[in-house]
Figure: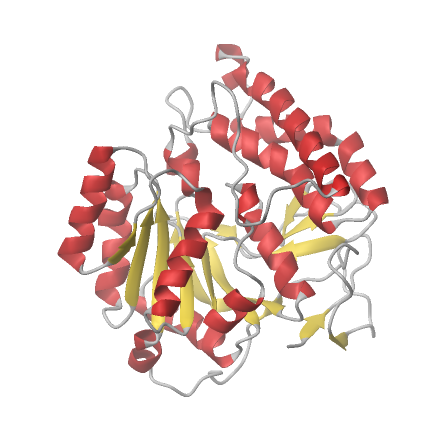
Amino acid sequence: MTARLTPHDDHGRPVPGTGTTGSPPPSREPQPTEPTEGTWSQPLCSESGSRLLSRTAIIVVSYDSASLLSRNLAQVAQAAPEAAVVVVDNYSGPQARADVLGLAEEHGWSTVLPTTNLGFGAGMNLGAAQALSQGAEVLVLLNPDAVIDRANLVRLVTRAAGNPSALVAPVLTDSGGRTVSDGAVVCLADGSMRSRRSQKPIPPGGTHPWLSGACLALSGELFEAVGGFDARYFLYWEDVDFSSRILASGGSLVLARDATAIHDEGGTHAQGHSARAKSDTYYYYNIRNRLLYAGLHLDRSHQRRWAVTSLAAARETVLRGGRRQLLDSRQPLRTAVTATRDGLTLLRQVRRGLLPDPTEPVVRSGPRAAPTDKDATQR
């Protein structure tokens, strides 16, 4: 496999005359790259849409999400009846499990039924294994709160089938048509994020690109080659990690601008007192996993920089939920401190070779460990 890598300067601009083709160096050395945009004038695969979809499996990881599956996944499956559908229901309770099984029976979906909540990455790995064992060759990884219509799904699958070494993502919009994701980068100077549309300067040091796990397509061959998702993240940052490992394996990231999916993510993170406030789960795993990513992908100097800026980064994450939430509760701040502490512990474990196997989810311990909100398996 080969990757098209485009070096960038400290402001995120491509460096003229430096485009190369070839395998990137080991993943622990930061490589400033960006997703290739899908701008081909002809399809990359000559198969008909119906035949392509017959080789495709749509995989969804659910956690108490029967209502979302009924509203969103049922719509996608109806629009693409040729595609197989695999639902991984991370256990949240007997009624939620019964609801998912009822939907699966009604629509003819396959199910994978863990006895506990394994998180997003481990759940997707189980779903992919099921799909591949059933003969799927192209995998579409979809959030329960995301929808993609037939035409856009065919465009997405066409890219993945025509380029088996590529991880492909559509442009994500909300239901009002506003773009919410068209590729992003993580800044190596401090672990902060930038969208491709952001006007905020990129700090010196370059970036790592990544594609949102809310909707992705790739060949089964590529999924197996990189070993699937790293389950240790449990939730959040595993798509950033997955994108980095795709590039490190010699693959590429492709943004298919002619394909669009709808992702109304706000509804899965909101708490009752504020339309903007995020959940405790959101804060904890976003803050903690930033440091896990640093340990797994960056050299020692970058790890030290991310550690030094960890409290500032935690504050920025909490403020994504707005300042008003802090008038009601200081819990987000307490969660931020706990997550930073646990993230630094994981960083030290990586350095000492003590981190668990990538197939084993690393979940939060303590009285607030068990996720009770629906974003427990969603992006």
